[in-house]
Image (cartoon, rainbow, N blue to C red; front, side, top):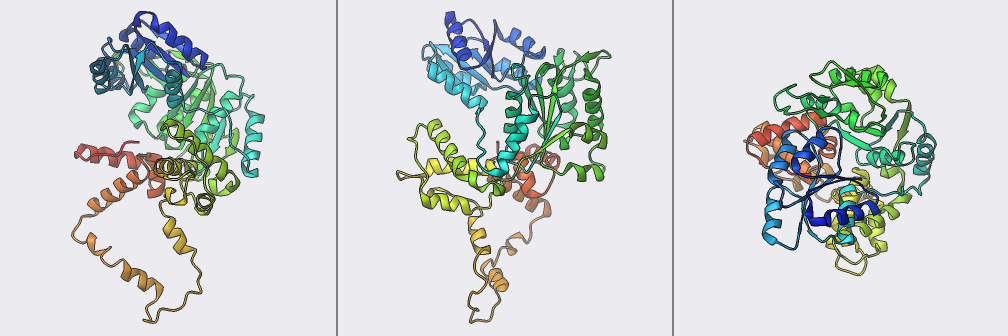
Length: 457
């Protein structure tokens, strides 16, 4: 984890830095916000920024947004000045840390931001074989394509491969190709020169240069525009990039890991993804099994999330009751590990007993699964109404409530309700809706322009 500390903080800065170093973080210190912006533009990336409340936090965060530098900012200050803390939060800081620094508090903030775990839960044979393969190819320089359904842990596996590689001392840089608009992704990857386009107030190094000597993760690479795919192919083949607004090639030394929840071979056949780029990325393919294919890992994963969220919320750790475990095992887990994680987070907060009881495990769609699994030998309805007709009668009014509404209105409600159900996760919502993440992103941008509140992730 890379920590950037901004400000002097009367000597306490070195204490905070030492604590972070002891917790495995790499620390860079900048005198002020302007120097920090320059460092970020020049590839001195950070996973977390700690900034003195005496600095111009609002201006700093605004500058980050304008230059599309995505990094969480935490304010810190000497003493417990409530007004300064509130002002920092209002200006965009995620948290406020009082100084002198508390070792456990610093550790908790670092852990919350990185959310890394060095161990893979892989007791199921389906997952064991995947980890064995990952261990075998990790020390090589081969490009890796990780595929699997949304929520199966593709980024977690990417980090695992990086930690097992010869590049472990180098940076691990992740780029979500689905979350960044097409017109900005090229700049995000390759960087730009000052004045290259409106808003380019200074030279900025892209993720390729930032990842030099380490690993670059191209998350959901299948969502990349075909024109940009050609530039990516050249960068991988030639091991050099050209910043926007420049004619000079820059050599880069990065290992590429790409992920996709789509069938890329089908995308190639449809002309949506370049065949040559597919073969370049698919040197080693690791397919992550769905949670349905690794049922024996359910108990350990569930308990892991219970322990994790109990600690985060200051709640005593609990075991999962047998009834709750049976309920978890019976579910289909369409959203995979991500759905399980969210479910267990709710269970920790809702549980009222000494163990996580079954009633605390609220699983969306469980009732529908139970109905689908009901025996087919049910006695016929004496009224003579078929089960399908009976279902229609019970849902009387479901269609009628749509009468008089426009298709656009119904579509908007469906998209927003699904996004809310997925706790704001765009990729998961798009997968459920059966549309591309790009289509979903464009719809959300349209709704935002119309003044509609969009659920945040």
